[in-house]
Image (cartoon, rainbow, N blue to C red; front, side, top):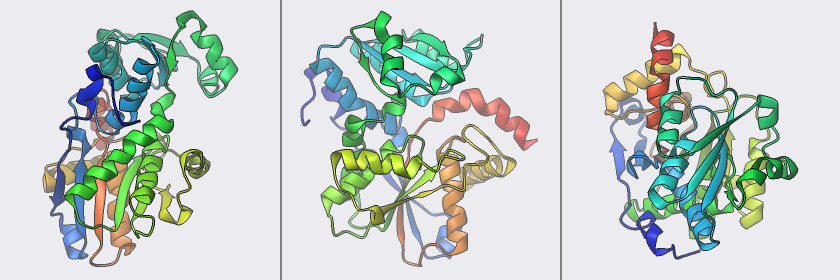
Length: 322
């Protein structure tokens, strides 16, 4: 899909984000060049990889005549936050099915979503585990038909198409690099990046590292393989999942992580969030100290945004740091 409807054309025009070289003492001491792809700057509300995941889903929904978008996420979901704003901006009705009880007062993420017109429905955790079951989803969306269902995290082939454009812009900004690193939840951003690397140059030695934010999810690599197999034939040797830096599980925060994020900001000026980018950079720095990368290596890290979530997690981070 190369063309967007006229009212969605802004999703492709003029959004090449900076590729910022980072002079961090750890990387300098090991002879490694580090670059941050600043996708946190792609849009003030549709932040980071959510921009790329949603753009072709929105286009497909518009081209098919859908006016109502439905999706899934947790109470602090960057995806639901971005989808709600996109619906508000581009004239879609939106409904979000939220994992767990929707507590009052709403946290900042869900309060924004409601302000932008999203209708929220709570699912128990057992119900939420059925979000990939077609019959269960059909029951949920029957009152909302006709609607276009975007999976949790917008993890579908259309998302892969969009996320591949991150690689396209990096290649316009940097002649060569050895690794591209990205945090992983659903794995769709990693899959899109891997597919784009393969399509750009199948013989290239660039490796993709996906840093999992999830604990005890050995099937993540299989899910990425499945996504890649559905749209291409990217080599397994091209990528790997790093799964030891989840800090106890999704949404879990440790004193080590909070301290690292504070020091990273002091040393680089860059703000991270604790769900994805903080854990990725903590893991990357640990790998550097272990000698995982050779001197002379060039690493590109994708900042996937999500900074809006800091508003709802700052108190928790402060308690952990104490």
